[in-house]
Image (tube, rainbow, N blue to C red):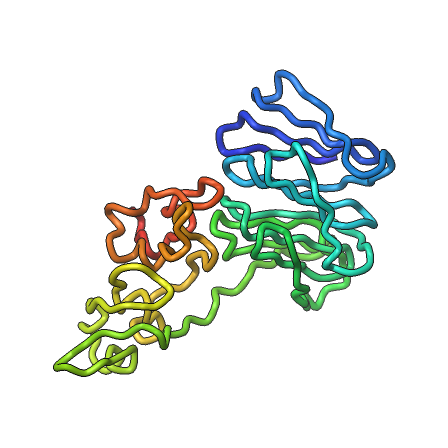
Amino acid sequence: MDLAMDASGKKMVAVEQFGNIWLSSDGGKTWREVEVGSSSEGWFAVTASSDGKYLAAVVRDGNVWRSSDSGDSWIEDTSVGESKRWQGITSSSDGSIVAAIVAFGNVWMSSDYGASFVEVVVDTGEEGSLRKITSSSSGAELALVVEGGNVWTTVEPSCTDDDAWTTTRNGKSVGCDWVEAWAPRCQAKGTMPSTKGKVYARYACAKACGTPCNDSTSWSKLNDPLKTCAWVSSEADKRCDVRGQGGTPAHDACPVACGGN
């Protein structure tokens, strides 16, 4: 049995081991049952996006299931191969990043709302099984608990420069190598094919400028995939409240771009 809710606390989802899924839209005052799979499904854990639209759940010795309509309908994912002893599941605020753990196994990651997963090998050096998992709002940071062991957290990713970023100086196109040569150039604005508008060098050239790089790589403005966290970074004071797919605001998914805004 497990329970999850949206940010408002109104939408709730509960999974019943060897039973069905239950939904509430009034903060738990009333519930309705949703039949998913067979009545013998061993539902073990569930997670929800901040708006309650995107849900994902795991079946012990089964598969991952996902919903994109607040739980009214569910799709079974078989991309992980044979059924597994799932132990827990978590997701980013917008629901795009999903991470699930297998007992005495590894972490399985999805960046497409749970439509497909890839295995990430976790070598804790401990004999205990992975028991619990949780995620930051952006999905960039995870924390794991090992039974009879310790808490493990993801390491901040190694920052890289985006070779696609360019700006023009003295009639010549220059990139992050030019920025790296002199720190004040991190304030220069340039362009990137994958993003609308101007982007600061300090954001695109994270390695050259020593900028943190843990913003979501999947977030974009609702119905506008070219307006990413990089787009937010150029006018953070105006754009950090913009909402993306799933209703997640930019300031949750793009903490570096927003700089605390």
